[in-house]
Image (cartoon, rainbow, N blue to C red; front, side, top):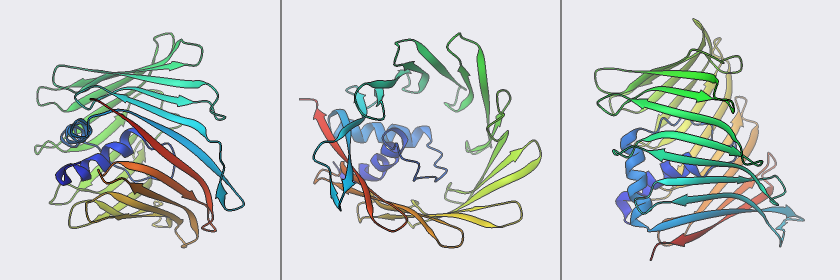
Length: 285
């Protein structure tokens, strides 16, 4: 993979590939970053990626793994199928099918359950500038579940998301604050007009997130995520801890000579390995 693509491949792998809850960075993947991620996958001629998880026993990964995720891409680098397997890896649990418009924007994500029926359908609406202005999620019967309204400033940066329906378990409003490099340095979550928590993010000179802290409205420090990268800009470690410094988990990433991720290793709060995820690639000829 050409070096100029590697940073954006890291962004898109987080967007599509990551299945753990270790990464809680509030990455707001823009259409420009998304397209560069597609270009990176296209440049690598990736047809599909399969993830298999191996649990650790006595300090070593098990011989037999379980299917975890499968991603299939078209020849332009866009994901067309995302498949998640049942926890024991024996059968399919969920399939996401992606639909794009003529400009390459995701217009619909259809989630199909293990019974073959549609579980949910998510539709995105864009303005003339290509900004996603509305997202609607429907249930299996076609009833509207949740609507997200996206607002932008005069520089084209998303500054607010508002949830107008079905938000019992979600923040009603999310507000983004940027630095001069267009990085999101703070994300505030509100229920109605009451702040519930916020994330504060710091970036490297290459504009990659390196530290993110979570705070309560009373400024209590509750969480911290640290991100480390190699010289090419590929994410190599994500370390999560509570606000008092107590470790929660660590995830380490390894790449092949082309810059594509090949392993994702998870450690517990005692820094003991718990699982290893291996990535296998198919390529267009």
